Each structure stands twice: as structure tokens, then as C-alpha cells.
Image 1 (cartoon, rainbow, N blue to C red):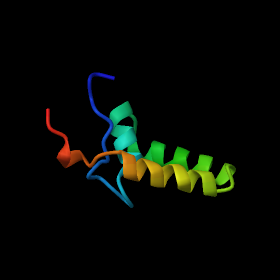
Image 2: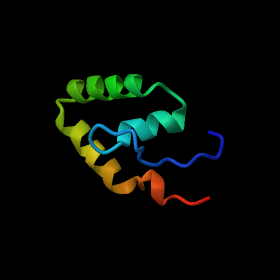
Image 3: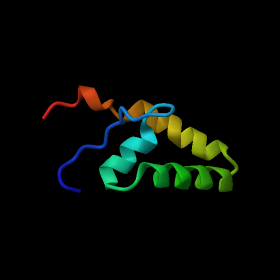
Length: 67
């Protein structure tokens, strides 16, 4: 990655976690959201929700990061 920090995105549906990951990786936001949804469903939903909540807490919002 080119020195970009992993932050929650302002382009959010719930908390901006998937969009933040997509921006950090340089991937399409819709692709990351679909991959998250599929992985969450395949893992019986609970682990996927737990990981999302943990990332929501751990990842700083985009507007609080200063260079």
C-alpha cells in the first residue's frame, strides 16, 4: 500500500468499514461489500458481524487522521 492508513470511509452504508477497506486496498467498494456479505453468510453470520463491530471500534474515522 502506498502509505495510506486504514480508516473508516465517509462513503458509508453503516459505519464505513467496508468502504474504508476498499479504499485502502484500491478495490471497488461494491466488490468488498459483496465479499464481506458472502463471507459473513458462509460463516453463519455471527463471526462476520463480530469482526465488523470490532473494526468499527478499532478503525479511526477518515476525518480524524492527520498527515
